[in-house]
Each structure stands twice: as C-alpha cells, then as structure tokens.
Length: 207
Image (tube, rainbow, N blue to C red):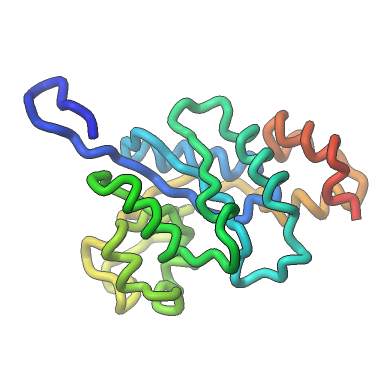
C-alpha cells in the first residue's frame, strides 16, 4: 500500500505477475514486460520462473537455480522488476492458482495483474480452477496486433476479468534461442548480456 501524494487516501499497490519457464529469458520477455508495466502503470512486476511446469517433461527443463539466476540477470536494469522463487521453491508441479494464492496472501490489498498470452487466455477454461484464478487476479492479456472483442472472451471470464495490452511483436522465443545455440551460433543479440554470460559459463543449450 502507498499513500496518495494528492490526498489522504491509500493507493493499492499495482503488481504485475509474469510467469514462465524462462529457459532462457530473452529480449522479447524483457520488452513485453516493460510494455505491460508501462501500459498498466505497475509499481512492481514480479517475474516468477516455473518450478516444475505441469505441461513439460522435467528432464527437458534447465535446473531452477540456473533459470532463477538468468531471470535475475535479465531483470537487473529495470527497478520495477523483481524475481520470486515462489514456484521453484515449491515441490511438485507448478499450477497458476496455487501461485496466485501465495502471492495474494503476501499482498492482500494489492491490485494483481497476471500476464498471459492470447493463446493462454483463450484456453482459460482448461486451467486448473479457472474461476478461483479470476477471483485472485485480473488478467493482463498481451495483444500482439490481433483485434480482441468482448464476444471472443472465454465463457469462464467475465467482462472485467481481463485487460488487453498492446505489446511489441518481437520474433524471439526461448525455443529459437536454444536452437540457435545448439547450432553453434551466437545468441548475444537474442538475450540480455547477463543472460548470455550465464549461458556461456554454464554451457547451456549446446546440444
């Protein structure tokens, strides 16, 4: 909670939540995080690397300690960005509803915005406990140029469940970065410098 400098009221913290495997975090992640933070006037944006993603085989994911280190490096230049180990410290699969519950207990008065892509939003009904998710947070849906309309909303989502945010379309993905490195190519233009240093030091993604 923050004091309103123009009055005596208390202004709720505006907190963004950006989850993902981040294997590795890349320049596209950083760009869209900044776009969302700017558009929603967020005070803080919490990056949350997934612990054991329920949709991915654990053997295909870089150890959590290295992903956390890379995310810390990727977020170092923006004072609004913070990194949480709420999922990597938890045993078992990481489900959004569990993470949101923990964050809500820590920030009971904050206005939460959980950042998702359009595909994830369209699949909202398949999430674990989607109604509970929407009780805990609003969704910040990244719109990379496709027009969205109220009649395209998933049945489970109400009119106030989501806010669509225009973000820059950047042709980078973690899969592309990994393939780039596995092919022996330099990925320095795809990831933040600190992330590139960690990848090189740890010998990640070399195939």
